[in-house]
Image (cartoon, rainbow, N blue to C red; front, side, top):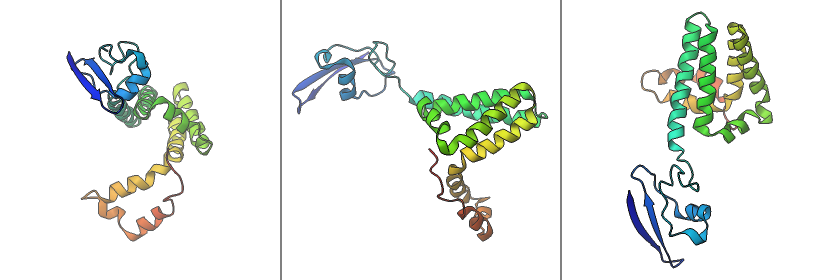
Length: 193
């Protein structure tokens, strides 16, 4: 446990904070709003984990877990395709991908992304494909999911192309005039999130 005292000269207040060694840096103004102005000098044990009932969760761990789940989801989907459209692996990949996306960008942002009116076509296609995979038609389900994925994430393609152009070995392919003229047609039409 670490205890320290901070003085706020503007507000003429002092803060005494007790935190565990694994807690993240504490935003004192946000902490004051959560606890109330009369309870500032009470010690708080591990605000980062919210053990005392007034803290907020540290979201950096959720993002790391979300990226891992998204990666495993893509890996399991790829394995499902390699193993002749195995519906169990594809379904596992879909579940891991969606849960990883939710943890990476947050549940609220995920729901807003999938429920935007511009994204209805992609969301319905992706959901119908997921349903087809679950009932045992993985080939047609993956086709619908691929279409939905392309429609949903089409706003990210320009960013991906710029990244691919800067890769040392294969970047020259994406810098060719016929490829850049094809890709420039889709640049800047949509905002991804």
